[in-house]
Image (cartoon, rainbow, N blue to C red):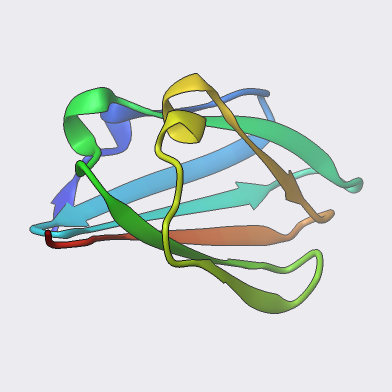
Length: 99
């Protein structure tokens, strides 16, 4: 894996994050350091995004995985809202789709 954290942005001073990429796969982890739930906006640099992808994410706020087979990448270019529970985390995985 390659650390691509510099090509990812989240808003707010209380969101800690890291992004790792390998061919066809991007994983982003966001953590909340506050005693309250926060909302942050996630943006990923265009050159890190595949042409088409599926996405799944785990959020400790709802304690479950969610998935979209055809994820609209414009959301990550424009700012994808992520809610993170107090002292919680969110893991987002993007997988390139072929064809």
